[in-house]
Image (cartoon, rainbow, N blue to C red; front, side, top):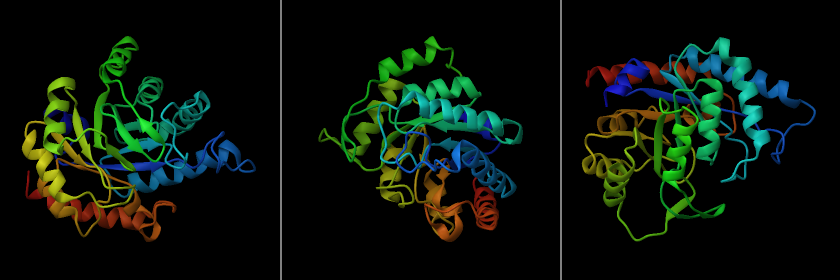
Length: 271
């Protein structure tokens, strides 16, 4: 797990989500505001997150609802433009997440210089977007073919809005995922973005693979932060940083500052 401190500069990092508004081709795309409005809004959120003291950011097409498992080229092109325009403003390590397409996430990481991606790389799921299959061997071979072997892979093994089809417990899934695929980290999620991650599931995963980095992936807030970080090796945080803690809102820098002040105090207990 040495890579965590090397990349983020701290143990138990807080990776903040920079959620991009609907992009061209998405049902909610603002045709009047266009791409420039999306860039401008993303810049405001990015600066608020960084001014609030987060350890890293991850750009995702969070508002490209309903999500695709084979993402259209226009989405990746638009995300690359946004990150390219923001690049000079980025002061912390950053990653990308093209929901829900690991191949496209790797392509975007190479294009932008992202240090990590988060995706669903393994398993077969019954999901809100239909039957969701994966092919980790193909993904990793693509990673090496495009010289992205330095990009860290964060495996979401409890993806939102989906259920593993096989009758396997989470400990077994964690162990076999680590044995077969050598992930850089495992992410454990709640039902949706902003839903609290079950601490008992995090415990089961961490106990099953104690040498592997495990992140709490959704629903971490200032009230449950200490409990979550007692087990998890870090957290990916989005909704709680927004005005009134609502998913659809923009980032509130004061909420970020308060959260990170608390996070730093909590981390002192583990350093």
